Image (cartoon, rainbow, N blue to C red):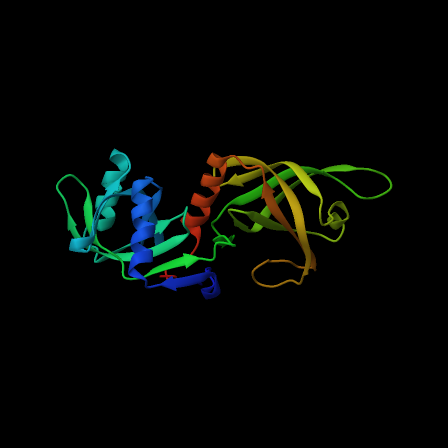
Length: 249
């Protein structure tokens, strides 16, 4: 299932706008990811736009690091097209592979169209089988008798700006809109990031195939706060690694 709603993406065919975004990424040496689906799995490599030759309708792509050079070569070998994602600009596009150079760089065609994520939103990953994302924190209840409880919950969905998880009716007593959660630990596979969060919504959810509930639950939606830049990058890389973009471009 494609996890990127078509309403989230806006296609742009304007030559000047496309050139401006790609050239700005080159000049500022922004992070770019090359990627391709291989045997049903997204394989990625961090690259930079090394040279832009607009008059030849091409971009020279250079991998980051020796291992990246090998990975880029593997992605490009025998490939007709490669996909690219610019996380800072929330832009996706596809290019045709023109040539693999002797130094490991590859030449690809300049895109005629880019797809841009609505800048008010983020790529959102629905956490499904095989993806490990958990949150851990301590929270005080709202009853007359104050009680603190430790929580560790699997995420229902996650993005660069927020996440959600589901609690039981009994656990709901600990959560109200506007509550701040300090020292939120987010576990991404084998990595951890720390931040604060604010509860922005609480929804009642009925059991279905996706949430795997037996009884009715409540989805707690958090906005992530005070996240260090490096942690935010890790989170966005994680979401990008698993989100289904195959139909998005």
